[in-house]
Image 1 (cartoon, rainbow, N blue to C red):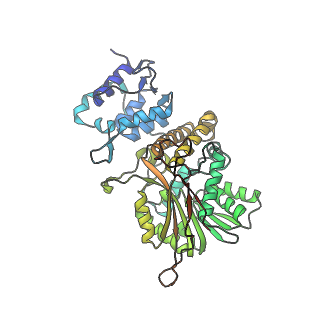
Image 2: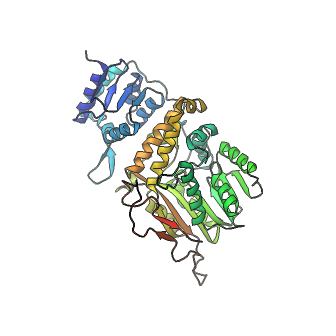
Image 3: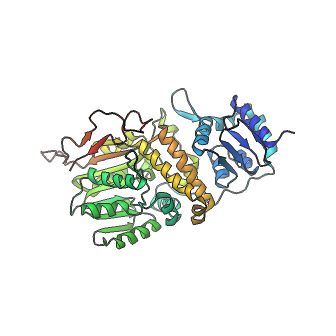
Length: 461
């Protein structure tokens, strides 16, 4: 009988109808596939039981988190090759399942029987403990959102310090070619403050404030009085310690509070950075209404949010199984056009939209490098499974941003005085941004659609 790697390769190629682009190493030390290609190491037949029991991303994710599947060689190259197998472009341009759908097709049940003979005794083992527990009740209620946020963020401040670096900023940085992660995160914080035109004595609300980096920067550099809200107790504890160490307790407050519970407006400006992805489509108009109500007339909102590509049939959208189970429970992405429309429906005047998609790819690659630089310590600080989750999630996300499967946008909106105000003045200068004179891409900006990393410099306020 053939060895396990040869049998697995034959099954995959029978399903695909083409050669397998990755090499396979199996638990019996056998290998098959193209020499020199990234290697998918299937360490234990339990991985097959997980995949057969739960075909699709969730079965693969469980095997990865449990350490039963690994990649040897260039992780990014392997994920790129595997993504081509798992995802295909439909005739209408929408993404559809590839190999994972084929594995459910009656025409390839013989291949499934071959896998069953390799998989070993049933049933599969229970899911790894890092998987989000079964959720009950209506999505995006206060209680369920608190549990979802805790799953993602309350995994250890020391772990996040290793991954994020000293800035402790967990959102897309704003890069200059040749710059460092710390410099890019500083520039992102400052960009937000400049877009919001912050000045001495103003009140800033940071919705989803993380570990407090933006409220600290705004208070220190722009003299504002800032309130940050988060649902993570670990984040709040860390942020309050930083605030005290910098002697800013008289100007900066961090609360464990849902944005829906904030009642001390109006604020001069609101920042929402990497938080709106948790809101959900059904609640997004409520989110926009609440932020609008918390702003004074003339106040600005900076909404920094990941977006997905629009689908021809939006009803077909479903949340990524791996992300939902292991990374952001109940998280949802929307096309940027829908986000802008809902902000306008709430009364905002949208004045600027800046796509910084390429910046997030670079940020994620920097975080992966931090994680991989001391992976054993990262595993000790949280758990081996959790560290594996973050490595896969961040590397795959970097590729998704690079390949334009997802994007990230900063939307600047204003609570422009309503029609009762005869001026209708939004408070922005005529030229809010200064673009590069020739529009040429910056050095090293390949694959960015012809735009430099810094396409314009906000000079408003």
